[in-house]
Image (cartoon, rainbow, N blue to C red):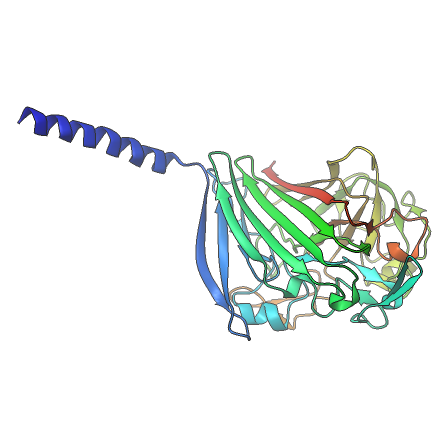
Length: 378
């Protein structure tokens, strides 16, 4: 009997200890089937969860963030990113909702560039220009996923090999993007890449945010701050002219937090070209590595998004091409300016502008970049 009691005590002790460890685990990752591609490839969704209640769902297709549940000042967690309820819409309709963008985020004029006296021609998928990696950019491929987590962070690593001349880009490019959620409500997005032939690269994350968590609301009352003294004016096709123009005295001044809607209807040719804001800001403190670059605040919910990055530019897009034709999650449609993007990146058309920071990647080099999205309430 004594031996039985002793064994029972051991079982209870170690059993309870394991139960307590599981119940006290501060982060976790849940995995479930999201759908199948038109080719019949099963696509899984991984949901990163921290101890506070934040949940970020990511699928293998396009590395897309399909949902991002964030608390408001009342402690209510709601989804704040635009997207779809099914894989088919991401395959056929999506304007890059939540996706990883590459090989080159943003536009390249005429879909052409030159490396080492060799001319390369890319797909023209944005009128006469190349946009976001082409017809089948990184937002349209299936990534290989690996999940890891410990007491302080939940991590999803996504890998993809972009083969030589895919979409017209030279070199076999081996890419890893790592999403990591910690208990401070920070999502780190870390980009790594290597190539076997000189190429160009400009990776970014293309989530559309609406911090009200009601996708029927527009984003004009969100307050945006961008740490940039200048921006890049564009031509009518949204290709930078090469000029760096100061923001002071223009509608593009977000050095102090202001409502998106305050100046967006101002009489200004640049706003006419973009149908609002769709421009790249030249970020300050470019030699300081990862630093604060922008924020967005929504007063009713109290949600504050802060963005930190080592990139030289930030594309602020005010959802000007959303026109009510895309169905939203649940019921409804995504109407004009119901989402905004803060895309950390190199400047558009950099391969054709010698005065812009270089986007070349050489064999033997390693492309490294990091952007952090931090949420809080005030």
